[in-house]
Image (cartoon, rainbow, N blue to C red; front, side):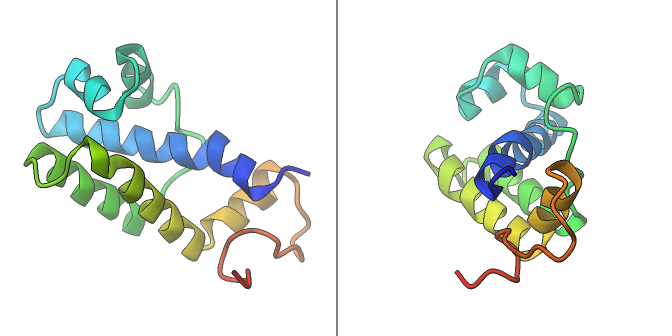
Length: 125
């Protein structure tokens, strides 16, 4: 059994990074600038925008909208590199609230459908 935190590391964070890199690229940023901003390598950015990384989890539209708003804030300099961790955590919390984590846990970790141990809306914390 994989704990939910492992699912976040393997699927959720890469999906958020992928969407953020794509949004920043669509706003006109260069891969090199995106890599410096996100503190990842330029080849990692390339893999995110070509779906070689971060494509195993399809983000719901509501989450994509949050990432799009964040990318716009970064592009317009209304947010900085220091905002990446708290904004990513906020987006991750939204993913948990949308029960995406439970669905992912069932699909990727073969958890039984009656399991509610994920960090979705069924959790007590």
